[in-house]
Structure formats: C-alpha cells, structure tokens
Amino acid sequence: MIPKHRFDCINLCLKETKELLKERLAENQLLKVRIEELEKELFESKVETILAINGAKNVTAVKALIDFDALEENCDISALDEQIRILKENQSYLFESREEISYVLVPVNSNDPLNKSIANYVKKIGRVEK
Image (cartoon, rainbow, N blue to C red; front, side, top):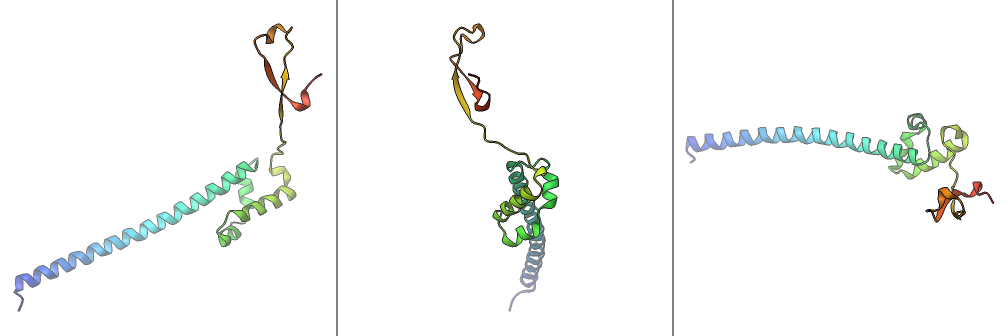
C-alpha cells in the first residue's frame, strides 16, 4: 500500500508535468510558425537579390510578375533563372541593359603638366583617342 500523502504528491507532480508539456507544445507550435515565416522571408530575399543582380530596374514590379507557385513546387531557385530569361526577352524594359566594359591602360603624355605625376590612367576602350 502507498500512503495517502505519497499518492497525492505523485498526482500533483503528474498534473504539473502535463501542464508543462502543454505549454511546451504550444511554444513549439509558435516556433514552427515563426520558422515558416522566416523561411518565406529568406526565400523572398533570395529572389529579390537575384532580380537585383540581373539588373531589374524595379525589383517590386518584376517580383510581381514572377510565378512563385512554380518556384515553391520545385523548391529551387534555378527555376527563377528561366522566368527571368523569359521576362528579359518579353519585357526587356524592366531590366537595365548591361554592357561589358573593358578597361585598358593608356600611356600618359609626359609633356602634359596636369599628369606629370601619373604614369598611367584608365580609359574606356571605346573612348581611346589616338
């Protein structure tokens, strides 16, 4: 036989443990929701960064044209590259045109009084005067 006071003590501990378990489960659910929100924000940030790298003039406007359902199905950013390529072809005005700029070192005229201390300076290839 178990004494009454020992039985009451065990029941009280069990009750407190169940309450703590309920609290922890509720906290766990809140954390899961927060993690999902943060993952969504991270995904949107990645998309915005990729759009900015690709030269979108207005990231918000281009982002509105992106099919996020297709991206979430693949769980991959690589599908975004295809969508950006199609947007660049169909709606090129949304993106900045980027040209490759090459630089070349051109010798400085040693008789030029403004540039005596400079050995070389940089000019764009298309603007080199001879």
